Amino acid sequence: MLITENIKKTFEGLKALDGVNVKVEKENITLIIGPNGSGKTTLINTITGYYTPDEGDIYFEGKNITGLSMDRIYHLGIVRSFQIPSLFFGLNVLENLLISYKINPGEFFTKSIFRKKWLDYEEKAVKKAFSVMKKLNIENYWDSSLSSLPVGHLKLIDIGRALMADAKLIILDEPIAGVNAKLANEIFSYILDLKNNERLSFLIIEHRIDIALQYVDYVYVLNYGKIISEGKPEEIINDPLVKKVYLGE
Image (cartoon, rainbow, N blue to C red; front, side):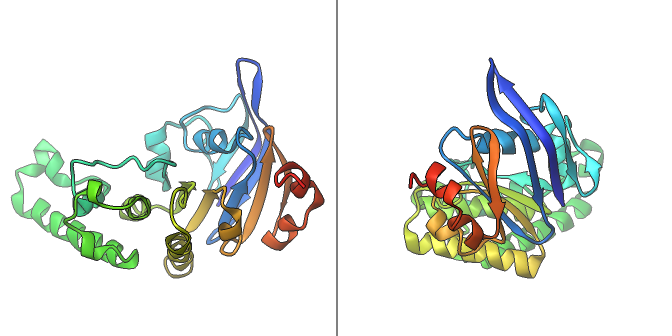
């Protein structure tokens, strides 16, 4: 589904990415791990159009998306989250989800005058939002203020917004950071269910590999902007180079 070929990105002489090749298979959960400063966030910023690579190419569903704007990449079906959820705290849970529903005709002057048409659209949007909340087990919080919710629920709302946008590939930046172990496992269980039942693909950055490795299909290890190891979770955890560089053994 997603392929990066020889991606390079330099900031004032610092090689943040130095020839990175990553592949995300369709309906897979792919994990990227590595020490702080290894280039993980730079990589997803480059994939999603926040940065343009200095060299290399990025392909999504066979199309070269290198250098496309963030909004064009978003409309192709790549949706990302941030380590700190970028939500609208002045709105409730339902309203945050509805914002991500694409191209509401009520927002266009020429279409908004046909009231029945956009009201039908709004009804479909609300039904979908409640369906998404049910999948993530947050439907009881639909009218809750975000400031009243723990960080784990905010992470789920972020995933919910990606589902509302009909994402094909969801990129998550530390989806269980700051979340207790029980809810962290629940979040990854929801991700696994979405992969299996909704046929979605995920690219995930996560430091808590003790939890993440239980749920993912394939792992890449970044260090100083280079992929130093890749493979199945059981292969990565037993790789001496990974233990030395990443785990400090």
